[in-house]
Image 1 (cartoon, helix red, strand yellow):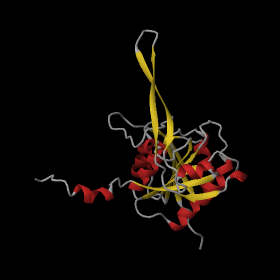
Image 2: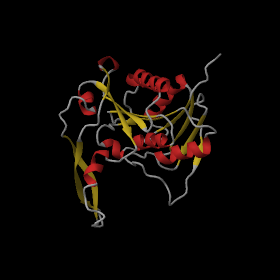
Image 3: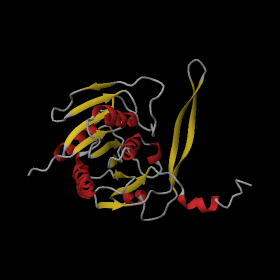
Image 4: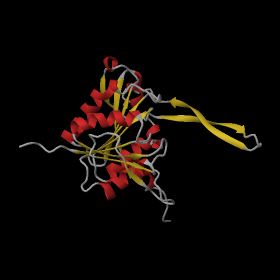
Length: 259
């Protein structure tokens, strides 16, 4: 009996024509039946934003003839997943993959990431999900170097599943395929952005600002995503959408909230 191909939803935050998502689609086509729903324009750093105060549009397009269905969406990455699950797909997909992002989503960057928020939204919907990112912001980054690893991680998740409420945040170092040392399951490094605003003036004399900043890694642990990436490994961090700080509940119960 022929095993049924898995149904795979593909999305991203760089836009449906970005080289990263086209590379991801090429790998997913080898594994299953692919449906693409992705933003019609770049939506980086959108986090978990959804569209509630304006209309949403989806357009069926045909960039790749081997893709079952392909849609561009006027909304955010999370909008794409919501529309895919509720309006486009007749059944829940077996997997959602998001990316491959042009740039890092390691450490604290996961909070701001549209790529990861799309994957998290899929997780909320009960769909196993993976966000993929490459530490190269160049539009013409070399995604071929990581395709073998994308395939391996995807197949392992399809075969073994993921713990309930868990999504994978996968980041690739900017290296040749032969230079990548392997895959490490890690924790998220404790790091932050030291942010600054570059204040300028328009020709009309009105102030405007550009956000700039420096990434500060305070974490010296060798079990973090930042350490793995700096040392030639692919980082795989299990993340969750339950934001409860369970370790703080006992302490908070000592406060006199009800007195």
